[in-house]
Image (cartoon, rainbow, N blue to C red):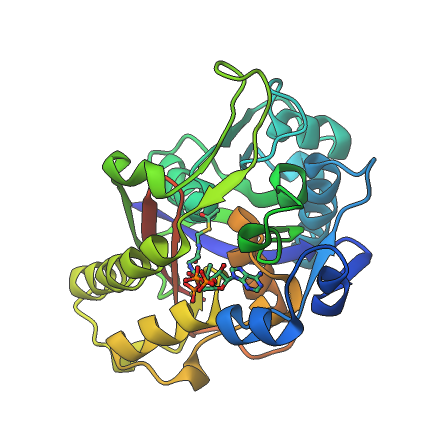
Amino acid sequence: MAICSRIISTGSYLPKRIMTNFDMEKIVDTSDEWIFQRSGIKQRHIAAKNQSTSDMAVIAARNAMEQANISPKDIDGIIVATTTPDQTFPSVAVKVQSTIGVPVGVAFDIQAVCTGFIYALSIADNFIKAGQLKRALIIGAEKMSSILNWEDRTTCVLFGDGAGAVVLEAQENNSNSGILSTHLYADGGLRDILYTDGGVSTTGDSGHIVMHGREVFKHAVNLMAGAVNAALEENKLRVENIDWLVPHQANIRIIEATAKKLSLPMENVIVTVQDHGNTSAASIPLAFDKAIRSGRIKKGDLVLFEALGGGLTWGSALARM
Ligand code: ACO
């Protein structure tokens, strides 16, 4: 019997400290009105100085394990999508593994910036289909505040910190649920429109985010809509069949423009960007967890995830809950 994977639970974590747009007004020359109109963001959560990406990842992971009612020994793989690891090495994934007491198994990080969660989900799905994993923790966790230039108003108002997780489990392919497809893309020719101006093998530090916002915006809508259409085509579905779109939470204008291009009503789109800003790889699992826990997304629903980030990288994943 062929094997596929299914999302059995979700979890998330946002740091306690909230910075509103009014707080941002005290730091840089900006306004609540400008930030909200251009991005839809009202506030972001900022991790404490001594709170690392793995600390947030651990809480989100425990949350997801609790919802599935499973213990650490039931997990045989951990994949963390992050751009802001605690250390250059070891990975955030091995820190999560030892902190929550998951037995020896597969654990590694992947880096695809804001598309990281979809990349990690796709990798885990393929591991499960190949029979190499049975139950995996997929985590998106970011301390974006650590790579922001807090004097650059064009970027610092847009990002926040947080973590989200799902548990992915192997199941027989004859059920009507599970990951139906994943589509991943990258175009390194577009790497100069969104990057950090540093790195361990160049400047010796992590650097800060530099973004040519208009350029990113221009590519984002077309590329994400393309990834969604690839998922629909492969599964012989139409946009009307989609119950929920869970997009990367970067900017409400990009989310709305993508939904419009797809002719998908906004009532079918999960939006949480107003509460936490762009949390990069954490944004999709954060939005997803909120929608699951509030009862909006239910068993049997068809859910489409899509994201775009630095690289550029982009992609989609389609799942029946
Ligand atoms: N407050 C007030 N004014 C500002 C601010 C600010 N925080 N930031 C920029 N401005 C000014 C600019 O200086 C400019 O002034 P000027 O006209 O006098 O030169 C004006 O506002 C317009 O600036 P634009 O950059 O043209 O504004 P735009 O409408 O494009 O909005 C934004 C900027 C929100 C960044 C938008 O381009 C965007 O959302 N881009 C996509 C970002 C994104 O989705 N990234 C996702 C991937 S992130 C990742 O992968 C890590």
